[in-house]
Image (tube, rainbow, N blue to C red; front, side):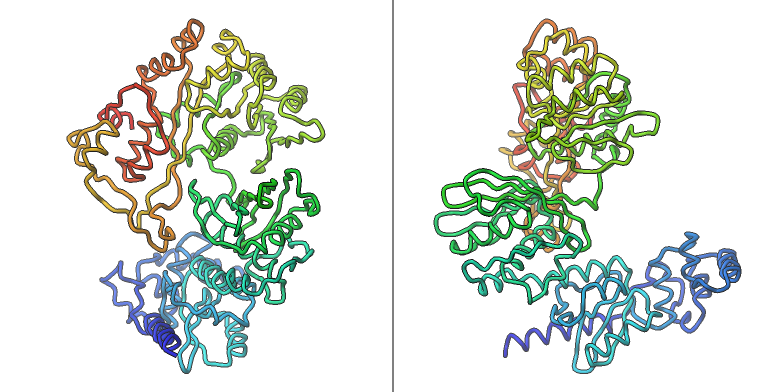
Amino acid sequence: MADTFDKDVRVSKAVEEVTKAPPPKWTRLPSVDFRSLQHKTLGQILVESKAISEKQLQDALREQLEDGNNKKLGEVLVANNYVTEEDMLRALALQLDLPYYDRLPLNDIDPSLVDNIPIQFCRDNKILPIARDDFNVTVVVADPLNIHPLDDLRLILSTNINMIVSPPSVIENAINRVFERANDASQKVLDELNVGDVGDEELEETRDLLESSDDEKPMIRLVNSLLARAVKERASDIHIEPLENEVLVRFRIDGMLQDKTQIPKRHGGSLASRIKVIGKLDIAEKRVPQDGRISIKVAGKDIDVRLSVIPVAFGERIVMRLLDKSAGGKRLDQMGLEKKNYDALGSLVEQKHGIVLVTGPTGSGKSTLLYASLMHINTSDINILTIEDPVEYQISGVGQIEVKDKIGMTFASGLRAILRQDPDVIMIGEIRDAETARIAIQASITGHLVLSTLHTNDTASTVTRFLDFGVQPFQLSSAILGIVATRLLRRLCTNCRDPYDPSDAELLLVDTTREELQGRQIYRAGAGCERCFGIGYHGRIGVYELMVFDEEIRNLILVTQDSKTIKKKAVEKGMVTLREAALYKVLTGDTSIDEAIRKTQTDELDIDMGSVVEKG
Protein backbone atom coordinates (compact mmCIF):
# COMPACT_ATOMS: atom_id res chain seq x y z
CA MET A 1 0.00 0.00 0.00
CA ALA A 2 2.82 2.39 0.85
CA ASP A 3 4.40 1.88 -2.56
CA THR A 4 1.06 2.48 -4.26
CA PHE A 5 0.49 5.62 -2.18
CA ASP A 6 3.97 6.95 -3.01
CA LYS A 7 3.38 6.29 -6.69
CA ASP A 8 0.04 8.10 -6.58
CA VAL A 9 1.72 11.07 -4.89
CA ARG A 10 4.38 11.24 -7.62
CA VAL A 11 1.76 11.04 -10.35
CA SER A 12 -0.35 13.70 -8.66
CA LYS A 13 2.68 15.98 -8.47
CA ALA A 14 3.37 15.38 -12.13
CA VAL A 15 -0.23 16.24 -12.98
CA GLU A 16 0.00 19.39 -10.90
CA GLU A 17 3.29 20.38 -12.54
CA VAL A 18 1.97 19.83 -16.05
CA THR A 19 -1.52 21.30 -15.64
CA LYS A 20 -1.11 24.10 -13.08
CA ALA A 21 2.39 25.51 -13.54
CA PRO A 22 2.51 28.71 -15.66
CA PRO A 23 3.42 27.68 -19.20
CA PRO A 24 6.91 28.95 -20.16
CA LYS A 25 5.99 29.93 -23.68
CA TRP A 26 6.78 33.60 -24.18
CA THR A 27 9.49 34.31 -21.63
CA ARG A 28 11.96 35.39 -24.26
CA LEU A 29 9.74 38.40 -25.14
CA PRO A 30 8.76 39.77 -21.71
CA SER A 31 7.64 43.13 -23.11
CA VAL A 32 4.54 41.51 -24.59
CA ASP A 33 1.52 40.77 -22.40
CA PHE A 34 0.71 37.36 -23.81
CA ARG A 35 -2.33 36.83 -21.62
CA SER A 36 -3.91 39.76 -23.44
CA LEU A 37 -3.43 37.87 -26.71
CA GLN A 38 -5.84 35.09 -25.76
CA HIS A 39 -9.08 34.83 -27.76
CA LYS A 40 -7.48 36.58 -30.74
CA THR A 41 -6.86 34.92 -34.08
CA LEU A 42 -3.72 32.88 -34.61
CA GLY A 43 -2.38 35.46 -37.06
CA GLN A 44 -2.94 38.34 -34.62
CA ILE A 45 -1.15 36.45 -31.86
CA LEU A 46 1.87 35.74 -34.06
CA VAL A 47 2.08 39.34 -35.25
CA GLU A 48 1.67 40.92 -31.80
CA SER A 49 4.22 38.50 -30.32
CA LYS A 50 6.72 39.58 -33.04
CA ALA A 51 6.96 36.04 -34.42
CA ILE A 52 5.94 37.24 -37.92
CA SER A 53 5.41 40.57 -39.63
CA GLU A 54 2.08 41.96 -40.82
CA LYS A 55 3.22 41.54 -44.42
CA GLN A 56 4.06 37.87 -43.86
CA LEU A 57 0.61 37.35 -42.35
CA GLN A 58 -1.13 38.97 -45.33
CA ASP A 59 0.95 36.93 -47.78
CA ALA A 60 0.03 33.73 -45.95
CA LEU A 61 -3.68 34.64 -45.83
CA ARG A 62 -3.61 35.39 -49.57
CA GLU A 63 -1.95 32.03 -50.29
CA GLN A 64 -4.48 30.27 -48.08
CA LEU A 65 -7.35 31.96 -49.95
CA GLU A 66 -5.90 31.05 -53.35
CA ASP A 67 -5.66 27.43 -52.19
CA GLY A 68 -9.37 27.45 -51.41
CA ASN A 69 -8.80 27.29 -47.62
CA ASN A 70 -7.65 23.67 -48.00
CA LYS A 71 -4.68 24.43 -45.75
CA LYS A 72 -4.64 25.77 -42.23
CA LEU A 73 -2.99 29.14 -41.71
CA GLY A 74 -0.37 27.57 -39.47
CA GLU A 75 0.57 25.07 -42.18
CA VAL A 76 1.06 27.87 -44.71
CA LEU A 77 3.21 29.90 -42.31
CA VAL A 78 5.41 26.90 -41.51
CA ALA A 79 5.68 25.83 -45.16
CA ASN A 80 6.96 29.31 -46.11
CA ASN A 81 9.44 29.35 -43.20
CA TYR A 82 7.77 32.45 -41.78
CA VAL A 83 7.56 30.74 -38.40
CA THR A 84 8.86 27.52 -36.85
CA GLU A 85 6.50 24.70 -36.01
CA GLU A 86 7.28 25.20 -32.32
CA ASP A 87 6.41 28.91 -32.39
CA MET A 88 3.20 28.16 -34.26
CA LEU A 89 2.23 25.56 -31.64
CA ARG A 90 2.99 28.05 -28.85
CA ALA A 91 0.68 30.59 -30.43
CA LEU A 92 -2.04 27.98 -31.02
CA ALA A 93 -1.82 26.80 -27.41
CA LEU A 94 -2.14 30.41 -26.25
CA GLN A 95 -5.14 30.97 -28.48
CA LEU A 96 -6.86 27.89 -27.05
CA ASP A 97 -5.73 28.66 -23.47
CA LEU A 98 -3.78 25.41 -23.20
CA PRO A 99 -0.40 24.83 -21.47
CA TYR A 100 2.59 24.46 -23.81
CA TYR A 101 5.74 22.56 -22.84
CA ASP A 102 8.93 21.87 -24.77
CA ARG A 103 9.89 19.20 -22.19
CA LEU A 104 7.90 16.46 -20.50
CA PRO A 105 8.45 14.70 -17.13
CA LEU A 106 9.37 11.37 -18.76
CA ASN A 107 10.31 9.57 -15.54
CA ASP A 108 6.96 10.41 -13.92
CA ILE A 109 4.78 9.04 -16.71
CA ASP A 110 3.08 5.81 -15.60
CA PRO A 111 3.56 3.15 -18.33
CA SER A 112 0.27 1.53 -17.29
CA LEU A 113 -1.53 4.46 -18.94
CA VAL A 114 -0.76 2.93 -22.34
CA ASP A 115 -1.69 -0.66 -21.44
CA ASN A 116 -4.67 -0.68 -23.80
CA ILE A 117 -3.37 1.79 -26.38
CA PRO A 118 -1.45 0.68 -29.50
CA ILE A 119 1.87 2.42 -30.03
CA GLN A 120 1.02 3.05 -33.69
CA PHE A 121 -2.12 4.96 -32.66
CA CYS A 122 0.02 7.27 -30.51
CA ARG A 123 2.62 7.74 -33.25
CA ASP A 124 0.13 8.38 -36.04
CA ASN A 125 -1.76 10.99 -34.03
CA LYS A 126 1.18 12.42 -32.01
CA ILE A 127 -0.74 11.90 -28.81
CA LEU A 128 0.11 10.32 -25.43
CA PRO A 129 -1.54 10.10 -21.99
CA ILE A 130 1.02 11.24 -19.43
CA ALA A 131 -0.76 11.58 -16.05
CA ARG A 132 -3.93 10.58 -14.23
CA ASP A 133 -5.79 11.89 -11.19
CA ASP A 134 -9.13 10.92 -9.65
CA PHE A 135 -11.17 12.65 -12.33
CA ASN A 136 -9.07 13.19 -15.46
CA VAL A 137 -6.26 11.93 -17.65
CA THR A 138 -3.80 14.54 -18.96
CA VAL A 139 -2.91 13.97 -22.61
CA VAL A 140 -0.13 15.67 -24.58
CA VAL A 141 -0.91 16.45 -28.23
CA ALA A 142 0.88 18.04 -31.16
CA ASP A 143 -2.36 19.15 -32.86
CA PRO A 144 -5.02 20.29 -30.37
CA LEU A 145 -7.48 20.87 -33.24
CA ASN A 146 -7.50 17.17 -34.14
CA ILE A 147 -10.27 16.06 -31.80
CA HIS A 148 -11.02 12.58 -33.16
CA PRO A 149 -8.07 10.81 -31.44
CA LEU A 150 -9.09 12.56 -28.20
CA ASP A 151 -12.59 11.12 -28.52
CA ASP A 152 -11.07 7.66 -29.05
CA LEU A 153 -8.89 8.02 -25.96
CA ARG A 154 -11.86 9.22 -23.93
CA LEU A 155 -13.65 5.99 -24.78
CA ILE A 156 -10.59 3.75 -24.20
CA LEU A 157 -9.73 5.32 -20.84
CA SER A 158 -13.34 5.93 -19.75
CA THR A 159 -12.52 9.31 -18.26
CA ASN A 160 -12.35 13.03 -19.00
CA ILE A 161 -9.38 14.40 -20.94
CA ASN A 162 -7.19 17.41 -20.19
CA MET A 163 -4.90 18.61 -22.98
CA ILE A 164 -1.41 20.08 -23.04
CA VAL A 165 0.59 20.89 -26.19
CA SER A 166 4.16 19.90 -27.11
CA PRO A 167 6.21 19.71 -30.33
CA PRO A 168 5.92 16.46 -32.34
CA SER A 169 9.58 15.51 -31.70
CA VAL A 170 9.09 15.80 -27.93
CA ILE A 171 5.96 13.64 -28.09
CA GLU A 172 7.68 11.05 -30.31
CA ASN A 173 10.51 10.74 -27.80
CA ALA A 174 8.03 10.41 -24.93
CA ILE A 175 6.10 7.71 -26.81
CA ASN A 176 9.26 5.67 -27.34
CA ARG A 177 10.37 6.04 -23.71
CA VAL A 178 6.97 5.15 -22.23
CA PHE A 179 6.43 2.10 -24.44
CA GLU A 180 10.02 0.97 -23.79
CA ARG A 181 9.29 1.03 -20.06
CA ALA A 182 5.95 -0.69 -20.59
CA ASN A 183 7.63 -3.50 -22.56
CA ASP A 184 10.97 -3.64 -20.70
CA ALA A 185 10.12 -6.91 -19.05
CA SER A 186 13.42 -8.81 -19.10
CA GLN A 187 13.21 -9.96 -15.51
CA LYS A 188 9.50 -10.69 -15.76
CA VAL A 189 10.17 -12.78 -18.87
CA LEU A 190 12.94 -14.69 -17.11
CA ASP A 191 10.52 -15.59 -14.35
CA GLU A 192 8.10 -16.99 -16.94
CA LEU A 193 10.65 -19.00 -18.90
CA ASN A 194 10.63 -22.77 -19.10
CA VAL A 195 13.46 -24.86 -20.46
CA GLY A 196 13.13 -25.39 -24.19
CA ASP A 197 10.50 -22.68 -24.63
CA VAL A 198 11.74 -21.46 -27.98
CA GLY A 199 9.45 -20.35 -30.79
CA ASP A 200 10.30 -20.97 -34.40
CA GLU A 201 8.45 -17.86 -35.60
CA GLU A 202 10.39 -15.46 -37.80
CA LEU A 203 10.99 -11.98 -36.39
CA GLU A 204 9.02 -9.66 -38.66
CA GLU A 205 11.37 -7.17 -40.26
CA THR A 206 8.76 -4.45 -40.62
CA ARG A 207 7.26 -4.63 -37.14
CA ASP A 208 8.57 -2.43 -34.34
CA LEU A 209 9.94 -4.41 -31.37
CA LEU A 210 8.25 -1.94 -29.00
CA GLU A 211 4.93 -3.35 -30.19
CA SER A 212 5.57 -6.66 -28.39
CA SER A 213 2.59 -8.59 -27.14
CA ASP A 214 2.03 -10.61 -23.99
CA ASP A 215 0.81 -13.41 -26.26
CA GLU A 216 4.32 -13.99 -27.59
CA LYS A 217 6.41 -16.74 -26.06
CA PRO A 218 8.69 -15.60 -23.23
CA MET A 219 11.96 -16.33 -25.08
CA ILE A 220 10.83 -14.27 -28.07
CA ARG A 221 9.97 -11.38 -25.77
CA LEU A 222 13.31 -11.72 -23.98
CA VAL A 223 15.30 -11.42 -27.21
CA ASN A 224 13.14 -8.50 -28.37
CA SER A 225 13.61 -6.81 -25.00
CA LEU A 226 17.42 -7.17 -25.16
CA LEU A 227 17.54 -5.71 -28.67
CA ALA A 228 15.23 -2.82 -27.79
CA ARG A 229 17.21 -2.02 -24.64
CA ALA A 230 20.49 -2.09 -26.56
CA VAL A 231 19.17 0.43 -29.11
CA LYS A 232 17.79 2.63 -26.33
CA GLU A 233 21.15 2.73 -24.55
CA ARG A 234 23.08 3.38 -27.81
CA ALA A 235 24.96 0.07 -27.67
CA SER A 236 27.09 -0.84 -30.69
CA ASP A 237 27.37 -4.53 -29.74
CA ILE A 238 25.53 -7.11 -27.63
CA HIS A 239 27.69 -9.87 -26.11
CA ILE A 240 26.00 -13.06 -24.86
CA GLU A 241 28.61 -15.12 -23.05
CA PRO A 242 27.87 -18.59 -21.58
CA LEU A 243 29.78 -19.17 -18.34
CA GLU A 244 29.89 -22.20 -16.08
CA ASN A 245 26.83 -21.30 -13.98
CA GLU A 246 25.08 -18.51 -15.90
CA VAL A 247 24.86 -16.61 -19.18
CA LEU A 248 26.23 -13.07 -19.00
CA VAL A 249 24.82 -10.31 -21.25
CA ARG A 250 27.02 -7.28 -21.86
CA PHE A 251 26.57 -4.17 -24.03
CA ARG A 252 29.39 -2.22 -25.65
CA ILE A 253 28.47 1.46 -25.19
CA ASP A 254 30.82 4.16 -26.46
CA GLY A 255 33.54 1.55 -26.88
CA MET A 256 33.34 0.10 -23.34
CA LEU A 257 31.75 -3.23 -22.35
CA GLN A 258 29.23 -3.06 -19.50
CA ASP A 259 27.50 -5.92 -17.69
CA LYS A 260 23.73 -5.67 -18.14
CA THR A 261 22.02 -8.85 -16.97
CA GLN A 262 22.56 -12.48 -16.04
CA ILE A 263 20.40 -15.28 -17.40
CA PRO A 264 20.10 -18.68 -15.70
CA LYS A 265 22.33 -21.28 -17.32
CA ARG A 266 19.41 -23.58 -18.14
CA HIS A 267 18.01 -20.98 -20.56
CA GLY A 268 21.28 -20.41 -22.45
CA GLY A 269 20.56 -23.00 -25.16
CA SER A 270 17.04 -21.66 -25.76
CA LEU A 271 18.32 -18.10 -26.00
CA ALA A 272 21.02 -19.08 -28.51
CA SER A 273 18.52 -21.07 -30.58
CA ARG A 274 16.06 -18.17 -30.76
CA ILE A 275 18.76 -15.76 -31.93
CA LYS A 276 20.01 -18.28 -34.53
CA VAL A 277 16.44 -18.73 -35.80
CA ILE A 278 15.93 -15.02 -36.50
CA GLY A 279 19.45 -14.86 -37.98
CA LYS A 280 18.57 -17.76 -40.33
CA LEU A 281 21.39 -19.95 -39.00
CA ASP A 282 21.46 -23.71 -38.49
CA ILE A 283 20.22 -24.29 -34.95
CA ALA A 284 21.35 -27.94 -35.05
CA GLU A 285 24.97 -27.03 -35.80
CA LYS A 286 26.82 -26.16 -32.59
CA ARG A 287 30.36 -27.23 -33.48
CA VAL A 288 31.50 -24.57 -35.98
CA PRO A 289 31.28 -20.76 -36.11
CA GLN A 290 28.33 -19.24 -37.98
CA ASP A 291 27.61 -15.72 -39.26
CA GLY A 292 24.26 -14.16 -40.07
CA ARG A 293 22.32 -10.92 -40.35
CA ILE A 294 19.07 -9.68 -38.84
CA SER A 295 16.98 -6.66 -39.86
CA ILE A 296 14.79 -5.20 -37.12
CA LYS A 297 12.94 -2.01 -36.31
CA VAL A 298 13.09 -0.42 -32.84
CA ALA A 299 11.42 2.87 -31.90
CA GLY A 300 10.99 3.70 -35.58
CA LYS A 301 14.67 3.06 -36.38
CA ASP A 302 15.78 0.49 -38.96
CA ILE A 303 18.58 -1.53 -37.35
CA ASP A 304 20.87 -3.95 -39.18
CA VAL A 305 22.30 -6.62 -36.87
CA ARG A 306 25.46 -8.56 -37.78
CA LEU A 307 25.41 -11.86 -35.96
CA SER A 308 28.41 -14.02 -35.04
CA VAL A 309 28.12 -17.34 -33.17
CA ILE A 310 31.11 -19.41 -32.07
CA PRO A 311 31.30 -22.57 -29.90
CA VAL A 312 33.07 -22.12 -26.55
CA ALA A 313 33.60 -24.27 -23.47
CA PHE A 314 30.16 -23.72 -21.90
CA GLY A 315 27.94 -23.26 -24.93
CA GLU A 316 27.72 -20.83 -27.84
CA ARG A 317 29.08 -17.31 -27.55
CA ILE A 318 27.06 -14.73 -29.50
CA VAL A 319 28.00 -11.21 -30.54
CA MET A 320 25.50 -8.96 -32.31
CA ARG A 321 26.76 -5.72 -33.84
CA LEU A 322 24.04 -3.09 -34.24
CA LEU A 323 24.06 -0.61 -37.11
CA ASP A 324 21.43 2.13 -37.30
CA LYS A 325 20.66 2.28 -41.03
CA SER A 326 18.21 5.16 -40.59
CA ALA A 327 21.04 7.38 -39.27
CA GLY A 328 22.87 7.27 -42.61
CA GLY A 329 26.51 8.13 -43.16
CA LYS A 330 28.16 11.35 -41.98
CA ARG A 331 29.61 14.01 -44.23
CA LEU A 332 33.29 14.85 -44.02
CA ASP A 333 32.54 18.16 -42.30
CA GLN A 334 30.66 16.26 -39.57
CA MET A 335 33.61 14.05 -38.60
CA GLY A 336 35.17 16.43 -36.07
CA LEU A 337 38.30 17.10 -38.11
CA GLU A 338 40.19 20.26 -37.20
CA LYS A 339 40.19 22.79 -40.05
CA LYS A 340 43.80 22.10 -41.07
CA ASN A 341 43.19 18.34 -41.32
CA TYR A 342 39.79 18.82 -42.97
CA ASP A 343 41.25 20.96 -45.73
CA ALA A 344 44.19 18.59 -46.24
CA LEU A 345 42.10 15.40 -46.34
CA GLY A 346 39.53 17.02 -48.61
CA SER A 347 42.33 17.91 -51.01
CA LEU A 348 43.78 14.37 -50.91
CA VAL A 349 40.52 12.60 -51.77
CA GLU A 350 39.94 14.99 -54.67
CA GLN A 351 43.15 13.81 -56.41
CA LYS A 352 42.87 11.85 -59.66
CA HIS A 353 45.19 9.00 -58.68
CA GLY A 354 47.10 7.66 -55.69
CA ILE A 355 46.10 5.90 -52.50
CA VAL A 356 44.70 7.37 -49.27
CA LEU A 357 44.73 5.05 -46.25
CA VAL A 358 42.77 5.19 -42.99
CA THR A 359 44.29 3.22 -40.12
CA GLY A 360 43.41 2.26 -36.59
CA PRO A 361 42.14 -0.64 -34.46
CA THR A 362 38.70 -2.23 -34.72
CA GLY A 363 35.94 0.20 -33.78
CA SER A 364 38.03 3.35 -34.24
CA GLY A 365 35.83 4.94 -36.92
CA LYS A 366 37.81 3.95 -40.03
CA SER A 367 34.82 2.90 -42.14
CA THR A 368 32.81 5.96 -41.14
CA LEU A 369 35.64 8.24 -42.26
CA LEU A 370 35.93 6.33 -45.57
CA TYR A 371 32.21 6.70 -46.25
CA ALA A 372 32.41 10.41 -45.42
CA SER A 373 35.31 10.79 -47.86
CA LEU A 374 33.35 9.01 -50.60
CA MET A 375 30.31 11.23 -50.04
CA HIS A 376 32.63 14.27 -50.25
CA ILE A 377 33.63 13.40 -53.84
CA ASN A 378 30.51 11.55 -55.01
CA THR A 379 29.35 13.38 -58.14
CA SER A 380 27.67 12.21 -61.33
CA ASP A 381 30.80 12.68 -63.45
CA ILE A 382 32.96 10.05 -61.71
CA ASN A 383 32.57 6.27 -61.41
CA ILE A 384 32.98 5.05 -57.82
CA LEU A 385 33.10 1.33 -57.00
CA THR A 386 33.66 -0.33 -53.62
CA ILE A 387 34.47 -3.82 -52.31
CA GLU A 388 33.39 -4.20 -48.65
CA ASP A 389 32.86 -6.77 -45.93
CA PRO A 390 30.02 -6.08 -45.30
CA VAL A 391 28.33 -3.13 -47.02
CA GLU A 392 27.34 -0.99 -44.02
CA TYR A 393 25.72 2.05 -45.66
CA GLN A 394 24.17 2.33 -49.10
CA ILE A 395 25.45 5.39 -50.98
CA SER A 396 23.39 6.61 -53.93
CA GLY A 397 25.33 6.55 -57.18
CA VAL A 398 28.09 4.24 -55.87
CA GLY A 399 28.49 0.62 -56.98
CA GLN A 400 29.03 -1.42 -53.81
CA ILE A 401 30.18 -5.07 -53.86
CA GLU A 402 30.06 -7.32 -50.81
CA VAL A 403 32.80 -9.84 -50.05
CA LYS A 404 31.60 -13.46 -50.02
CA ASP A 405 34.51 -15.74 -49.21
CA LYS A 406 32.42 -18.92 -49.55
CA ILE A 407 31.99 -18.39 -53.28
CA GLY A 408 35.46 -16.96 -53.89
CA MET A 409 34.50 -13.27 -53.86
CA THR A 410 37.46 -12.01 -51.81
CA PHE A 411 38.90 -8.51 -51.63
CA ALA A 412 41.59 -9.46 -54.16
CA SER A 413 39.27 -11.13 -56.69
CA GLY A 414 36.67 -8.40 -56.33
CA LEU A 415 39.32 -5.72 -56.83
CA ARG A 416 40.54 -7.36 -60.02
CA ALA A 417 36.96 -7.39 -61.34
CA ILE A 418 36.43 -3.74 -60.36
CA LEU A 419 39.45 -2.70 -62.42
CA ARG A 420 37.62 -3.94 -65.54
CA GLN A 421 34.65 -1.64 -64.77
CA ASP A 422 36.39 1.62 -65.78
CA PRO A 423 36.46 3.09 -62.23
CA ASP A 424 37.70 6.55 -61.30
CA VAL A 425 37.64 5.88 -57.54
CA ILE A 426 37.97 2.52 -55.80
CA MET A 427 37.21 1.96 -52.12
CA ILE A 428 38.56 -1.23 -50.52
CA GLY A 429 36.98 -1.98 -47.16
CA GLU A 430 40.22 -3.39 -45.73
CA ILE A 431 43.64 -4.45 -46.99
CA ARG A 432 44.18 -7.80 -45.27
CA ASP A 433 46.80 -9.59 -47.33
CA ALA A 434 49.78 -9.09 -49.61
CA GLU A 435 47.83 -9.77 -52.81
CA THR A 436 45.23 -7.09 -52.08
CA ALA A 437 47.99 -4.64 -51.07
CA ARG A 438 49.88 -5.16 -54.34
CA ILE A 439 46.76 -4.78 -56.50
CA ALA A 440 45.76 -1.62 -54.61
CA ILE A 441 49.19 -0.07 -55.11
CA GLN A 442 49.22 -0.99 -58.81
CA ALA A 443 45.72 0.48 -59.29
CA SER A 444 46.74 3.72 -57.55
CA ILE A 445 49.75 4.28 -59.82
CA THR A 446 47.84 3.51 -63.01
CA GLY A 447 45.30 6.32 -62.91
CA HIS A 448 42.89 5.41 -60.10
CA LEU A 449 42.22 6.99 -56.72
CA VAL A 450 42.16 4.21 -54.11
CA LEU A 451 40.74 4.59 -50.58
CA SER A 452 41.21 1.82 -48.04
CA THR A 453 41.76 0.91 -44.39
CA LEU A 454 44.50 -0.97 -42.55
CA HIS A 455 44.92 -2.19 -38.98
CA THR A 456 47.99 -0.37 -37.62
CA ASN A 457 48.64 1.80 -34.57
CA ASP A 458 49.54 5.07 -36.27
CA THR A 459 50.38 6.64 -39.61
CA ALA A 460 54.09 5.86 -39.70
CA SER A 461 53.70 2.17 -38.84
CA THR A 462 51.44 1.80 -41.90
CA VAL A 463 54.52 2.25 -44.06
CA THR A 464 56.23 -0.67 -42.32
CA ARG A 465 53.11 -2.80 -42.71
CA PHE A 466 53.05 -2.29 -46.48
CA LEU A 467 56.72 -3.17 -46.72
CA ASP A 468 55.93 -6.38 -44.81
CA PHE A 469 53.36 -7.16 -47.52
CA GLY A 470 56.20 -7.17 -50.04
CA VAL A 471 55.47 -3.77 -51.61
CA GLN A 472 58.68 -2.14 -52.81
CA PRO A 473 59.70 1.20 -51.18
CA PHE A 474 59.76 3.00 -54.56
CA GLN A 475 56.19 1.81 -55.29
CA LEU A 476 55.00 2.88 -51.87
CA SER A 477 56.59 6.33 -51.98
CA SER A 478 55.14 7.09 -55.42
CA ALA A 479 51.64 5.71 -54.71
CA ILE A 480 50.58 6.94 -51.25
CA LEU A 481 49.11 10.44 -51.02
CA GLY A 482 48.45 10.41 -47.28
CA ILE A 483 47.58 8.31 -44.25
CA VAL A 484 45.01 9.11 -41.55
CA ALA A 485 45.13 7.42 -38.14
CA THR A 486 41.87 7.68 -36.20
CA ARG A 487 40.58 7.01 -32.68
CA LEU A 488 37.22 7.51 -31.01
CA LEU A 489 37.26 9.10 -27.54
CA ARG A 490 34.30 8.99 -25.22
CA ARG A 491 32.73 12.43 -24.98
CA LEU A 492 32.05 13.78 -21.49
CA CYS A 493 28.36 14.14 -20.66
CA THR A 494 27.79 17.90 -20.66
CA ASN A 495 24.93 17.44 -18.23
CA CYS A 496 27.03 16.00 -15.38
CA ARG A 497 30.73 16.53 -16.20
CA ASP A 498 32.79 17.66 -13.23
CA PRO A 499 35.19 20.63 -13.44
CA TYR A 500 38.38 20.12 -11.42
CA ASP A 501 42.08 20.95 -11.12
CA PRO A 502 44.22 18.05 -12.38
CA SER A 503 46.84 16.67 -10.02
CA ASP A 504 50.58 17.01 -10.55
CA ALA A 505 50.72 13.32 -11.49
CA GLU A 506 48.10 13.82 -14.23
CA LEU A 507 49.93 16.86 -15.57
CA LEU A 508 53.13 14.80 -15.64
CA LEU A 509 51.39 12.06 -17.62
CA VAL A 510 50.42 14.55 -20.32
CA ASP A 511 53.78 16.31 -20.10
CA THR A 512 52.47 19.79 -19.27
CA THR A 513 52.40 22.39 -16.50
CA ARG A 514 49.66 24.47 -14.96
CA GLU A 515 51.02 27.56 -16.69
CA GLU A 516 50.67 25.89 -20.08
CA LEU A 517 46.99 25.18 -19.47
CA GLN A 518 46.46 28.92 -19.99
CA GLY A 519 43.61 29.14 -17.52
CA ARG A 520 41.45 26.60 -19.39
CA GLN A 521 38.90 24.57 -17.43
CA ILE A 522 39.60 20.83 -17.30
CA TYR A 523 36.75 18.36 -16.78
CA ARG A 524 36.44 14.74 -15.71
CA ALA A 525 33.52 12.30 -15.77
CA GLY A 526 30.86 13.12 -13.19
CA ALA A 527 28.73 10.81 -11.09
CA GLY A 528 26.41 10.13 -14.03
CA CYS A 529 22.85 11.15 -14.79
CA GLU A 530 19.76 9.99 -16.66
CA ARG A 531 21.09 11.32 -19.97
CA CYS A 532 24.27 9.20 -19.87
CA PHE A 533 22.71 6.24 -17.96
CA GLY A 534 25.00 6.89 -15.00
CA ILE A 535 28.23 6.46 -16.98
CA GLY A 536 29.51 10.06 -17.11
CA TYR A 537 30.15 9.87 -20.87
CA HIS A 538 27.66 10.31 -23.70
CA GLY A 539 28.68 9.64 -27.30
CA ARG A 540 32.12 9.69 -28.88
CA ILE A 541 34.30 12.15 -30.72
CA GLY A 542 37.00 11.44 -33.31
CA VAL A 543 40.66 12.46 -33.12
CA TYR A 544 42.94 12.20 -36.13
CA GLU A 545 46.61 12.06 -37.12
CA LEU A 546 47.10 12.97 -40.79
CA MET A 547 50.44 12.38 -42.52
CA VAL A 548 50.57 14.01 -45.95
CA PHE A 549 53.26 12.51 -48.18
CA ASP A 550 55.41 15.32 -49.57
CA GLU A 551 58.82 15.09 -51.27
CA GLU A 552 60.77 14.84 -48.00
CA ILE A 553 58.61 12.01 -46.61
CA ARG A 554 58.81 10.12 -49.92
CA ASN A 555 62.59 10.40 -50.03
CA LEU A 556 62.80 9.25 -46.41
CA ILE A 557 60.84 6.08 -47.25
CA LEU A 558 63.32 5.29 -50.02
CA VAL A 559 66.33 5.44 -47.68
CA THR A 560 64.88 4.05 -44.42
CA GLN A 561 62.11 1.82 -43.18
CA ASP A 562 62.20 3.12 -39.60
CA SER A 563 58.68 4.28 -38.69
CA LYS A 564 59.92 6.45 -35.79
CA THR A 565 62.22 8.39 -38.09
CA ILE A 566 59.38 8.95 -40.55
CA LYS A 567 57.01 10.05 -37.79
CA LYS A 568 59.57 12.43 -36.30
CA LYS A 569 60.04 14.11 -39.67
CA ALA A 570 56.25 14.44 -40.13
CA VAL A 571 55.92 16.03 -36.66
CA GLU A 572 58.70 18.50 -37.51
CA LYS A 573 56.68 19.47 -40.58
CA GLY A 574 53.57 20.19 -38.47
CA MET A 575 51.72 16.88 -38.16
CA VAL A 576 49.42 16.71 -35.12
CA THR A 577 49.83 13.32 -33.42
CA LEU A 578 46.95 11.33 -31.98
CA ARG A 579 48.05 12.17 -28.43
CA GLU A 580 48.20 15.88 -29.24
CA ALA A 581 44.78 15.78 -30.90
CA ALA A 582 43.35 13.99 -27.85
CA LEU A 583 44.87 16.50 -25.43
CA TYR A 584 43.35 19.34 -27.44
CA LYS A 585 39.93 17.72 -26.88
CA VAL A 586 40.75 17.75 -23.15
CA LEU A 587 41.44 21.50 -23.32
CA THR A 588 38.12 22.13 -25.09
CA GLY A 589 36.20 20.19 -22.41
CA ASP A 590 35.10 17.41 -24.77
CA THR A 591 36.86 14.56 -22.98
CA SER A 592 38.90 13.76 -19.88
CA ILE A 593 42.63 13.30 -19.33
CA ASP A 594 42.04 9.65 -18.41
CA GLU A 595 40.21 8.99 -21.68
CA ALA A 596 42.84 10.81 -23.77
CA ILE A 597 45.66 8.74 -22.25
CA ARG A 598 43.71 5.47 -22.46
CA LYS A 599 42.92 5.75 -26.17
CA THR A 600 46.20 7.18 -27.48
CA GLN A 601 49.86 6.42 -27.00
CA THR A 602 53.03 8.42 -27.48
CA ASP A 603 56.60 7.59 -28.42
CA GLU A 604 59.74 9.26 -27.22
CA LEU A 605 58.56 12.35 -29.11
CA ASP A 606 58.07 15.29 -26.80
CA ILE A 607 54.65 16.88 -26.54
CA ASP A 608 54.56 20.64 -26.09
CA MET A 609 51.15 21.74 -24.78
CA GLY A 610 51.76 25.20 -26.14
CA SER A 611 52.05 23.71 -29.62
CA VAL A 612 48.92 21.62 -29.00
CA VAL A 613 46.90 24.80 -28.42
CA GLU A 614 48.50 26.48 -31.43
CA LYS A 615 47.95 23.50 -33.74
CA GLY A 616 44.41 23.03 -32.47
